Length: 93
Image (cartoon, rainbow, N blue to C red):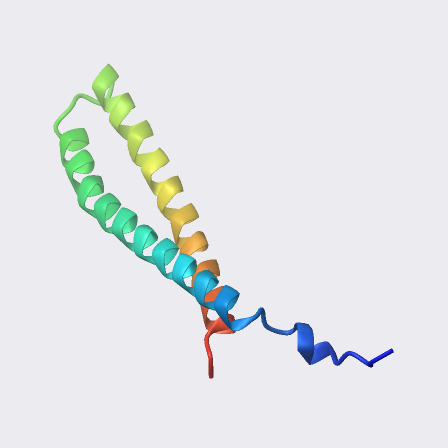
């Protein structure tokens, strides 16, 4: 039986690695696009919220929308960071 070095399993084959890098790159681009969109939408929502009565239904909906938007932004930032880390670990040095 031929001994197998642990480094044999360290990185996937080149073709698979290229596909993973391509998918990770697309993921990072999608995250960046979504985060940019969110950063444009949030100030608009905040401006509308500032002009509505604090006890109104639209004010509450906008506040909740901002909270959801902020939560999605945080999740996308974590996903983007994870994709970047994985991309760097797979990239040729």
